[in-house]
Each structure stands twice: as C-alpha cells, then as structure tokens.
Amino acid sequence: MSGELKADDRLPTEEELASRYQVSRPTIREALKRLAAQNLIRSRRGPAGGTFVNRPTLEEASQSLTSSATLLASMDQFSLSEIADARHEMEAICCRLAAQQPDPVQLAEMAKELAIQQQESLSDEEFCASDVRFHRALVDMSRNAMLQFLMYGVIEAMQPVANMVVYRFRDRQDVIEAHKALYQAIEQQDSLAAGVALDRLMVYLKARFEAAQQWKAEQGQSSAGQN
Image (tube, rainbow, N blue to C red; front, top):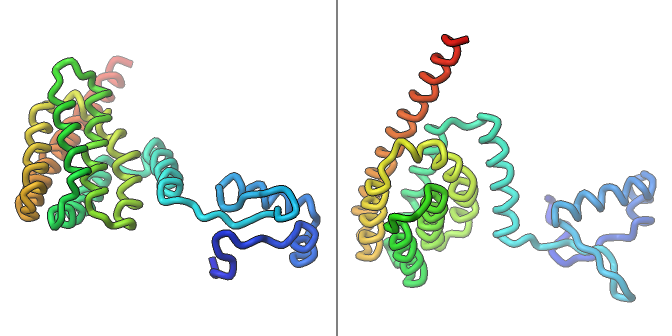
C-alpha cells in the first residue's frame, strides 16, 4: 500500500521476514499463502527464484470485485433500486464516452448481441447473458479503465441478479428496441441520443423492478395468510 514494493520485486526470505517482524516462520508461511491465494505474490524455484510481487490484471481485480458484489447482493446488502440507480449513473458516462469515438470492434459486438436477442428460440437465461454482453461491450467502448473496473461489478454481478428477478415482468421486445436505440445513437456519435435511450431503458427497468418487488410482497402476504 505504501508503494515500497513494486510489481516483480522480490520479497525477503522467510527467515528475513520472520526476523524483521519478530514472528515465527510458520506465521510468515501462512501470511504468504494468503497473499498467494489473492494472486498478489508468486513463487519461483531455482537459483533466480524466490517470492515476487504480482501485478494483477484488470480482469483479475474485476473478478474479485464481482465476487464480492455478488455475495453482498445475495445477502440483500443492495436493493434492486440501488443497483439500478448506480448502473444508470455510471453507464450514462460510458455512453457519452463511447459516442465520442465509437470502436468498430465493440460496435460489432453490440450488433452481434442484438441479432442474438431477436432469436425467438432464445431461453430467458440466454437472453439475460446476451444482455450482459451487450452492455459490457458498451462499457468497454468508454476506453476508461477505471470505469470498466467499477462497471464490471455492476454488469457482471449485479445485472444478472436483477435480470433473473425481473425477466418475467418485462417484455423482451421493449428491451431489444432500447438496445437498438442505444446502438444506433453510439454508432452515429450522438451522445445526447445515447443518453436519452439509456434513460428510457432504465426508467422501464426500474418500473419492472417495482412490479417484481410488489409481486414478491404479495406472494409473501398470501403465504403468511395461508399459514
């Protein structure tokens, strides 16, 4: 955290670390195991071997964030409305940046997912997965590593959770039309239209979230009455 150790620096030996921190070597080994489990260090054998500081990739760090976000969501730490509000605000920034200079590769990814979503035989699970990939391509087009990192947790963890709650209360065609409008606005480098398209999509989804929560509450009351 202090920056004293950089990526690829070699750590002192176990004996040196034990002496420096006045603890036993088994304690040092346990600490190193925990660091290795978090992919923060790596070991290499041989004359030039030792324990070295890792440089976690953005993907690896994002996966860790996603795991934590999924766990917290499963424990009801976040409400669907909070997830939707956070996604709305951050993805709006991504839309604006993406529309400034659209990436042909990511545009092609969005177009591919749009084609997939229009397949009538697509299952609910497959539609939700395509929805995640569509928005991930949009976020990647922002070319902002910090936004990509933060949005990874929202897109890869929170969006699937929300999708599986709300899928029975939404019309796929409404989502597809919103995705088309988003795609076209970004392709035409119209950041204002992209923002409007995202606003409409999120207002629609938030209404669906409310319907899902209302249905869940009514089901709970019905079950309680029967008991």
